[in-house]
Image 1 (cartoon, rainbow, N blue to C red):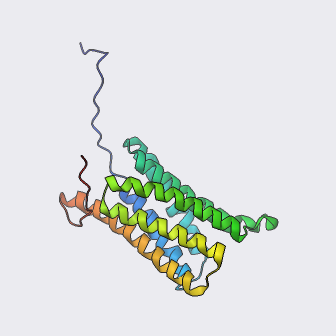
Image 2 (spheres, rainbow, N blue to C red):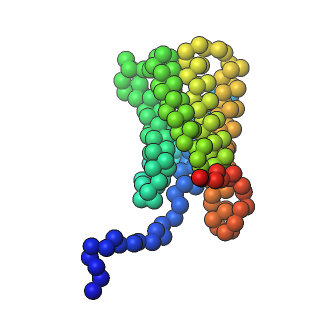
Length: 199
């Protein structure tokens, strides 16, 4: 008879949710920043993407990372999933509450706080991979640039530059998600991630 006091070892056969979370974040970030760069208009297309893919898909990925015992992934995907949901709410709720439209200082602080939070996660990526360093480093810069827009109003050229930086950030997340996916499918390095050797 098995010793009931012994710890039970269960093999984890669940899929890696990180590609889903990275694609959800990356594609939605690209789409929004195409608008910031002046390439397309801010429309219901972007808001819908923010709710269902950037928002809900990342929340699902974060919950799945929790099952994988990945604290970093859980924190990142759940946080940015709810970031997208709050951002869409900021755009849409003033239609129902006209006197509650956000002002520039409020948006500036909102984005600055997210930038500081992301800076903390960026430090964590130093133990993970170069690819994630690029994603979180460029995202930290993006939040600070967006915050500066609302505080200082530097003009259209600055907004467009910020948009293109955001497109780069989103593309780097998509690259990282694709690398994780293809490397697993092919059982080897198809796209390098620059994994950090842990002491």
